Length: 445
Ligand code: PA5
Image 1 (tube, rainbow, N blue to C red):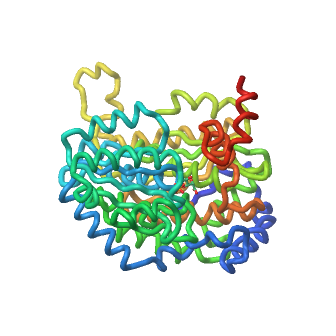
Image 2: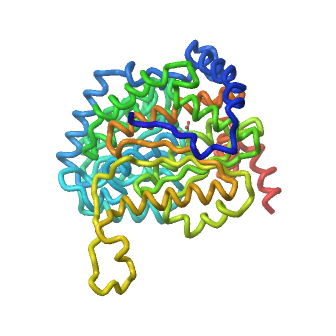
């Protein structure tokens, strides 16, 4: 099974009656989601996306990826939030965080438009000097400031380098199918466009062109990715809590939250999972953190962070639970040799694999954290490949929706994200925000 849940390390924290108690809420959440009558029901296109997606566009994504691979040394992905994290997380998970150093027949991939740092943007422009570059501007709304600024800079750079016509061939836009300034601009300039479906919100969009084009450019197999998601869609359609690990995870989160476990730490023992942690935090934080409710999603990579956050987790405020993502097998194995002099005292590990040591680190940690009062959910995934990633992505997306419904929030909107934008626009002097500007400036004095 590509992703399975173990509640073994929840013993002593949750009783079997509690599962019975929450089952009706899970059933109601399932019905709300599948009937399309729940909160935010105009954003549930991701639910059937693995089976119900635009096959022509999928083919076009593969063609565009081949073109980019054949004519580019560097591919720049411009986007923020849901228009950025999924693609990067998938590429680092499937390929490596060191993808750019290792890639041979595919372009290096860089990400921009995910901050307003001029240092970061200037550095990337420098990296691109003397290289053949293509870009993918990704923005559902087409108006998000961070990627819009980076896009303006990169368009100018490409037009200077290749001329308007040449640049046209290297600019790919992923946006709304009909609305928004990006769509208008792309149509006017003749850029190839891909669609973020109306009914799929940013953080649920990694299996649309938003994620698929960059993932395909990295040389990863997007057919296998979608197959994994399809199998998960099928597997996690069962309304029975006992038979559905995805629903069990959603239920456990809510049961722990109701007992004061208000922070969830997603844990992996694989550094290549770091960006998946970020993707997860966006998905759950933006979906559940509203109406003064919601679990705060945090993340760590072990054993790295056992030497930093490990102290807090073992011994700090007891409002935590951990969700550990383990992998059954590793792609590359290292076996430890024997040192005749045993200078480092490590001969007790001779002949053992690093994966074995990593597993013992997990086993020791989960028991220590349990002893420290931290419940652990354990998700086991077969391995780090496209198929298992598609499966895991769908698992987390569906669990997030069900969990949000159990919590009683709309898991598909993000009203809180607008507040900083309004203030920033006012302070920057954007037309239409004149009244707020003076009031905000007075508060900053
Ligand atoms: O999940 C979301 O909806 C957000 O994180 C968006 O993806 C993010 O704000 C970027 O929006 P857009 O794609 O419109 O530029």
